[in-house]
Length: 210
Image 1 (cartoon, helix red, strand yellow):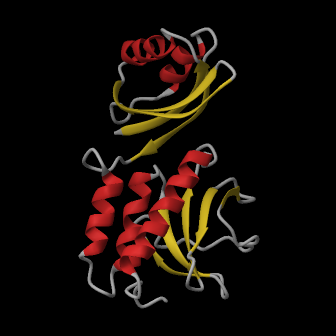
Image 2 (cartoon, helix red, strand yellow):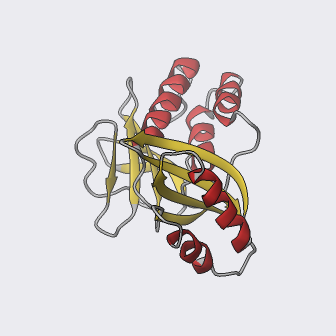
């Protein structure tokens, strides 16, 4: 299985190598690295690692906590998208999508791209989900979606959400994950760029929800 590990570490030469060696010594294989931020001598990185099914990840956390200056901020299961440039592949797929499938394709692709549990399309006036990706079949949108702007927020039950209203319809895209850190600002901006690009490509072909 794949795990996403969010780690805060010193932003200096050798720090990444120490983290990678620690992960390898624990039995994890690093398959992807995303740098989220670098500020005042500290960095925040997401590591995606391959980890044996059924094996507790406690040893990963214990190993990283033992590295001076390193702090684990979250660890959760993930499914990574295929290919080197999943954002580009998604927009290319949308460009050739049938008229009724545009937002469905977008929502179904977002959980893998953003390491989330599910994504959906919300009818903003009613607060109802009009489509959810696999994994969100029984989900409901949070009771209060205000303010209606690009943002990340946490629900009372601890679930993390990323929320992006569409610019030209009473619809919004909602992405959710649980047992994970909040969506980072870089993830929110990436989601916004994908939604805006999708709307530009689809135009009037947003689908049956618009």
